[in-house]
Structures are given as C-alpha cells and as structure tokens.
Image (cartoon, rainbow, N blue to C red):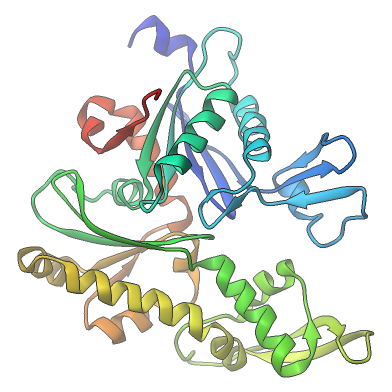
Length: 342
C-alpha cells in the first residue's frame, strides 16, 4: 500500500435512478441515500440532498423544487447530478484536502458515449482524481461473488429504479446484454395510471412506491393482502380513501413486469448454446431493488423454466461489486471501462 493509498479514500459509487450507494475502500458501504436533490427555484441553491429531499417530493411550495436528476439510469440534469455527487463525496471523504479520491461509478450497460462523458465529468467536477466506469450487470455479478473471469456463463438480471439490465457474463466480459429502461420507476407509474384510469383516484409518486413495496407482487400470493390508500378524487376534487388489494396491484404491474420477462426471453434466445447449458446448471441471479418485488423470481421461473435465485441483499450487490473491484484493481482491470479525456 503506497502513501497515496493512505491519504486518499478511494470510493465506489452505485449512481442509481432511485438510490445512490457509496463504498469506501477498507470501510465498506458508508452511504445509501435516495438520488433526490431539493433546490431553491430562484437561486438554484441546494436545500437538501438524499433522504431529506425525498420527503419533499410532491409537497413543495412553488419556491422549492425537489428533483431526481437521474432518469432511466442516466443523467438527465447534469448540474444537479454534480451537486448530488459532490455532496455525497464530501460526506464520505475525510481527507479531502490531502488527496482526491479515485472513483469507480457503475453505469447501465446500454449507456451511450455522451452519457458516459456526462458521468465522468460529473464525478471529476465533484472531486474525483480518476474516474473508472463499470457496467452495472458486471458490478452486480462481482458483488454477488460470481466467478466472472471463468469461461462458464452466468446470467444476471439487475432490476433497478430506472433500468433493468439482463446480461450473460463470461471471461470478464459481457457476452450479450439487454438494457431496457423499464424498472422500479415504471412500476410506480403503472400504479398511478391504473388508479387514475380505473378509480379516478390521483396519488403521488411516493404513495405509489409505498403501495408497490407493501402489497405489490408479480405472482399470485399465498394470502392476498390489501391496504388503505389515500389520494384525490379526480371527479369531486376532494381527498378520498379506498381499499386496494394485492390482486389489483398485480394487475397494475403486469405491463412493466411482462416487459422485463420479454427482455429476459430475448436475452436467452441470443445466448450461445454452450453458455445456455451453464445457465441451466447455475440458474439466473436476480439483483437490484426490483428483485424485492414479491414473486418476481417465481414468475421468471414459471416463464423460463430455469432456476432463479434472488441475491442476498439485492439492493447493495452493485455497490459491493464496485467495492470489490476497488480493492483488487489489478485482478479486475479487464472489466473496467477506462474513461479517457477526449
């Protein structure tokens, strides 16, 4: 370990649409916060970042704006992402004045060159010395502990907030991948639309997420549940409550869930036969926040006839992968997308 390593804290970042997680080398996960920033409209001054800003979504007066600067897994608002990153980096890097950190950021596998540059520039402006990019499915596979450098194939499905990544990995590379911009956020939107269309009830984004977490499912439950929800009656214009069952929520979620299953099918069709045989033996690993949707593994098992395993603590697989790469840069150098100055 050189002097550089002693005075700089290298960090791995899972820059997600819904949540951002940060790993510091030698320490582990030090931060897990919603990717939300609240700003003052007139001055652009940052009022809150992370959990405090998320509580403001859908509740702000005109003078305040609570935004999620990442859309579909990529940067939608460059300036705000930079502020989000510098706030998080400042919170976790203790010796900032001594040495800027080396940063590994995980990005969707379907990212374009322009989007890559945006991520790299944001991280550099936020205080990074060097920036490396790591594809999310690869990070998730490493985080789960799969032997990614072996010739045998591993299939990983990472369902996040903005994107679902389906990848087959072998020999430190992605053999085929499908990245669709349908994931947790689209599930929330589907719930909002369903209630609006069928019950003339308008609910906010946070309520939709709460419904998804509490009674959402992708497969029939042994015991169906229900919950009381509140929103605004679109016809009378007044607040209204209604009871919503897990069966209705499953119906609301059917479209995004079907889209993810279709992408998995396509990915399997494109997989070389030798690797297909490996997947049959090892099964599919499900990671990301979307893996917590009840019954998604059962539904995938039913549709593909393959074993489906939900990773332990699926929310942190990607950031654990960036951490593992940080700790062993020499071993994992092949999997990084080095970002060069153009």
